Image (cartoon, rainbow, N blue to C red):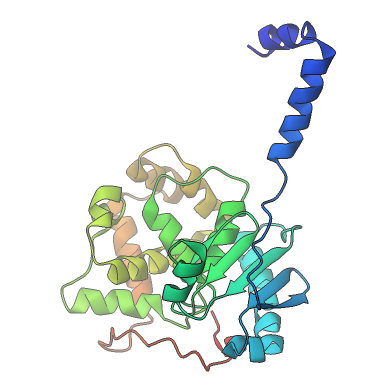
Length: 271
């Protein structure tokens, strides 16, 4: 196929080829970050921060920016990926409502060069999603793996193994065969499925390494077949091993979500 179309291109007029090349370069230009009237700007290493006047984190931007640079480095090490070369524009909105009014989108969200955070989700969640989308590999077919990786890196200081076993103890545990079925997964309790997804991801990363997790992430085989190929056990044994691993961190039933405290310095929120 390449030879066929390559020969066709050679016959095209030089002017048309020039236009095609020019347009191709245009498509790769980064999106221009929005400018919001009256907002302040602060640059530090890989980030440019944008925030409204009197914003709490704007007044504490030194701590905030130092923490996020550390998050970025630790996430890239965890994911075994290079640090991004492009500058990340980080928008600190006052809250999700005002953020939606300003951007027209639900917060948080990210684009190719921007992260918009509304201060109602964990500090590291959208940064993790941003980096996951930057990884040089195909998107996984399994929502549980995407959510698990992003939630694990959210810097909420949550113990997702403990929370998973809490669900087991109160009879609200979501079985693995439900987690890997995207439609069934989407019908479950969001908080509960994300806790379990993060625990599952951490179990795989700790016991088998990020490379085998990435192979599972990219696999086009069934999840069951991938588990057999990668971990040399069947699904039942794999799920049992995960639950036993998570139970090491169980400290009694307590599945209350700790509210986000906006006056807590992000450098105190650790993985």
